[in-house]
Amino acid sequence: MYKKILLAYDGSQSGQKALLDCREIAQWSQASLTLIAVTPLYMNLIGVESGVYDTNLAEQEKERYAGILDQGLRQLAESGHKAQGEVLVGETVDEISKYARKIDADLIVVGHKHLDGWAARWWRGSVSKSLIEHAPCSVLVVITH
Image 1 (cartoon, rainbow, N blue to C red):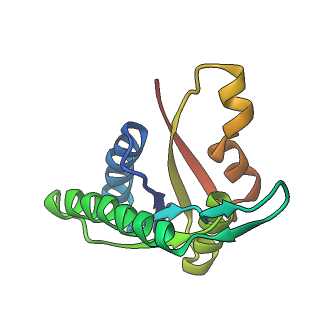
Image 2 (spheres, one colour):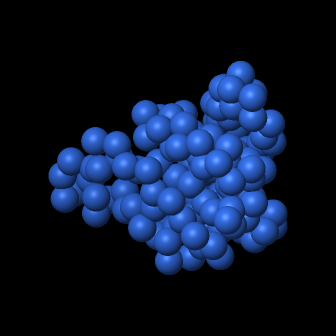
Image 3 (cartoon, rainbow, N blue to C red):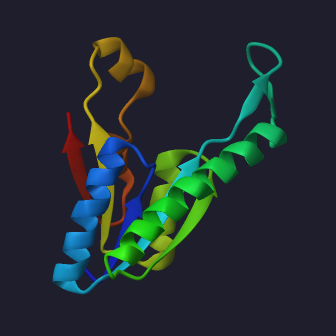
């Protein structure tokens, strides 16, 4: 039985579906819910092998992700679920895995949209696939097409 569920939330269509599924699982198992939104580190490239952290862009993105996270928390609150949330900065899979360890999560829920072409899959990689390899607990991947 799940007692602590962590939802990596980005506000996308697959994220919305994951939020709905997560809400149902939490209600069924009476688990606590935590939402996180992960924004990447933003670097301005100086050359081929170096870059500088862009604090202005990072702050703008952190604010944007905070808005997305607040929207998810509001949706949960409107349906009677109490949840907490946090915006994290860094590499997505690492940050989700670290946070799951921090709160001792039993289940991580992520949304996944199938990427159309092989080039898109190769270039972007799969967060859900990598997360399954690195997660400290079970992972539920909610699929949308």
